[in-house]
Image (tube, rainbow, N blue to C red; front, top):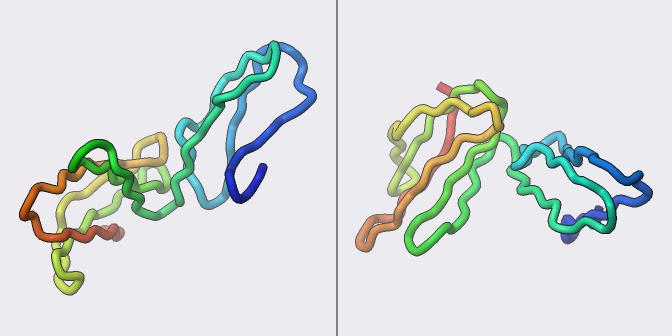
Length: 122
């Protein structure tokens, strides 16, 4: 794997079905694996890596953002929010799904104050 781009190449596989499963000790992958039928070169076997025990934000569309927390399946976490980084309040409590993720969408409405998020164990 190229550590700067994340691209990888696998060689010398026999024709047939093979499961490609990414692994890193500090990451959760989506999907957690893919079945690939090898008959010639195969491209587009891609994965998204989420850093474990961390919140990640990605832009979806317009003012909507996808917020993802990656962690150990079954763990419970409080989602805290603040508008000033000084005072924090409980927004919600989440259980990490079997996929290793919990997620929540946020919409940035016009005039809405900046909002900051963090997670903590209950």
